[in-house]
Image 1 (tube, rainbow, N blue to C red):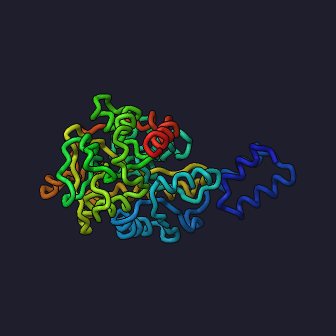
Image 2 (tube, one colour; image 1 turned 60 degrees about the vertical axis):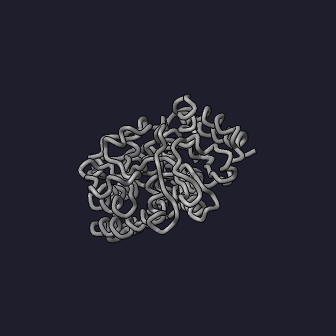
Image 3 (tube, rainbow, N blue to C red; image 1 turned 120 degrees about the horizontal axis):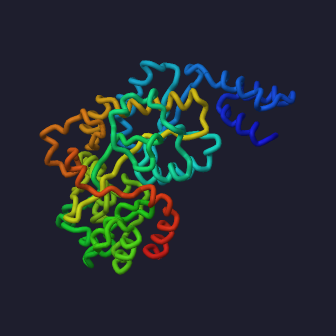
Length: 366
């Protein structure tokens, strides 16, 4: 079968009956040029025929809001399509998505700056149709280089989480190097924010490679390598690890659940972390449309308020105001506070992701 016919059939991978129609015509020798109009007609599938869409989400109260607020909002209009949620981290799920890119299992979800940028560079994301996501159009600031492919719906500062029973509040990113913290700091291989801020503290700016170099004399302090924010929060909360570069909102969620953790932004500053709504490529038009309509519920004012209240994640929709009682929380950002934080050149880092990850493994894990 010719490549152009394979490409045409791939669009209908999740619609076996329509795929078989095209295969039947192809077997009779009908060419792609003739079948294209028929394919376009078949692609106008009724939304009712999409039984479910599967999206990746972080767990905890973020997931609770999706189930309590977003699912009913979506199903009020599309009762025959069920939004399924796979609770995971992008570190775990994104490689699986790469492996199934030609026939996606997960249709979209929430991805941080690093993995959103990787998806842009690696051609993972489908173009967003503004007509499918009217709520999201209120968000004017996005990932530079990812315009039209991803829209940020959450943001939070990235600083240091610590156990107040074990250490004093850290003032500087360099405090993580203190000799008395040997084996008591946790890091990620895949999270470039911590190394970028180590570069800032070393006077080198947002330079991940310089940050890795700055960590090398102090790698004995690294007591755990983690791939889950929840696991990291539990390590710090139990006192097995004392300090960890971490996301403010997630640290505050852990604190609200009773873990002994606090969060601070050191004197050199922190980074502004964003979570983006993305849709994967190679789905049917109907599934793409429904996925984007569902993702738009994440930008609804009710959803943004619930995430602010229950998860301490700051809204990206400008009409949402921060309540006075949350102004003193170091994890909650008003627009003027968000503007003071560093923003990583995510596309640049994503293009160099494998080399930097390998450098971290060889120089700090060895």
